[in-house]
Image (cartoon, rainbow, N blue to C red):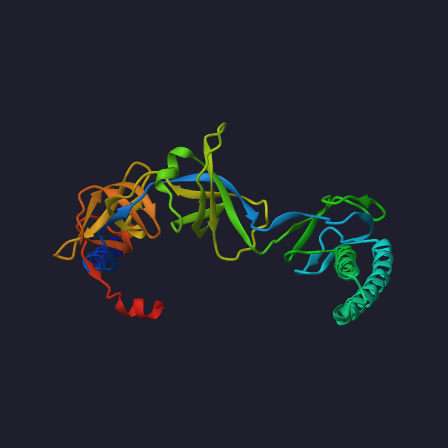
Length: 363
């Protein structure tokens, strides 16, 4: 009796379990048949250009060895690392001798002016008495010559005084532009000659990228072209500022300067610049997020008119901003899944999300 009852209870439990599993499977099938919400992008045709990464470095547009325009003994020089504004002193020379010379020349200028006044008065007196024939013509000529010589002496002395004042002013070597003192070529107490370098001054704010590219790329590069600069994986947009249209005889390379927005790059930082390697061509492009990359294949998921997806194998090409060139069975205007492609299978039903509200929010 007990054995029969236990067997009945077992069969009843087994039947309940089978019913529960069947219900769960039916619910799972119903859920799997529901369309999956996805976002889509469009296949487009646009001009693309292949780029090559060219090594370069960050340079300053104002990097100079500041020279002394006068000779003298150094009494002060700015420290390495010191920031200076345009017009501020970066070195001083002993100006004792130029000041003494200026004082002497001021006295000589005063004396020359006094002599000019006397000579001018003498000439005026001779001119008034010329009609009375008290003085001969030769005396009048001598008076006129003395006045002219006195005038020339004044001009000569004033020029020498101006030169002495110039030496006094230039005894303070001033920064021609704002920057940082990065190197000192002289020390306090040393004597410098005219044209000798005193310090190296670098403007660390006005910077750009300099790259040297092969001459074969010259035909594809134009001022104003948009390029990319990267440093240790981080990329920033730039624009070709100018091209130096002269190649080096040995390296067969030419220089390209690239401008970019302000950054925290230091002068001397090694970077790479993407420069066009070929002329632009027309190609089919898809959004980067639409491309699914697997170890042995790359594919996209196209949304059909029946709102199902189909897998299309493609070969990726040149990447440009947020799109990438592909070769495969896709056509301009095709809708490709850009969000949720990883969890979809071929033939699965999808529901395209209206992206307009999202675009307005992001805008």
